[in-house]
Each structure stands twice: as structure tokens, then as C-alpha cells.
Length: 136
DNA sequence: GTTCTCACA
DNA sequence: TGTGAGTA
Image (cartoon, protein in one colour):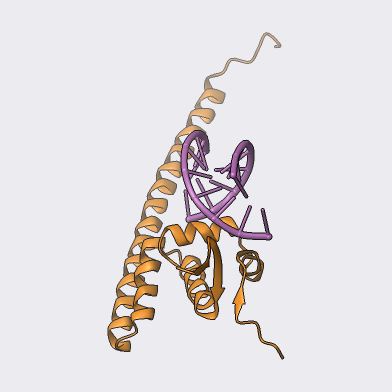
């Protein structure tokens, strides 16, 4: 029953299926701030929670900066309403970005297909104009 | 095993 | 947004 209270970076990495390198990187970016025992990082449940939130944000395609923003609010944890409002703002931004990407992709696909059509027409034209080789 | 820094895509 | 190498 000795429920462990702290964890090493490698334990956390294993648990979330990421590399210790990535965890240090996230710390650099201000997403987490584990306690230190000397220079080695000591992770508490609080850090695990933050990391879990961060990875959820990543799955949604949020930038680390956005994730940092949201997680910071989770900690500050004043009123839930402003947190939810902020979350909606970020999600709205993300959705807008995805919609724009979809538009861009569709535009490129359209151009590509037009070009394909052109190529096919050129091929057919060549067939019509091509003299049969020396054979008969 | 963990740390940091530098370089690299 | 991460990784790899080299270091201590």
C-alpha cells in the first residue's frame, strides 16, 4: 500500500510513454516545474497531473505556449468560469486554424485536379496527331 | 541513472 | 517540437 509520493524523471517518462528528454524540454518551455533534490528533478503527483493535461493539449494540437497558458490557469485555479472561457478561446483558435488548413488543402487539391485534366487532354491530343511509326 | 549545453531538423 | 551527442 505504500503509495509512492515522488517519482524520478525516467519513471514519469515510462508512465507517459515519452522520453526524459521531452520532459526536460517541457520544463524548459515552462509547462512543468518539478522540485529539485540538488540538481535532480523530483516529480510529485502535482507534476504528473500537469503533464497529463499537457499531453491532452498536445493531442488537440495546441502549441506548447497555449498549453502553458491553460495549465497556468489550472494552477492559479481562481474561478472555474474564467478558466473555461480561456479554454474556449484556445479551442476556438485551434478550430479556426484547422478550418483554414482544410480550405488550403482543398484549394491545392482543386489546382492539382485541374492540372491532371490538362495533362490528360494533352495526352489524348498527342495520340490523335501521332503518325504511326514506320510500320504501315 | 541524471544533469547540462550545443547542434540539428 | 523535439532529438542526439558529449560531458560530468
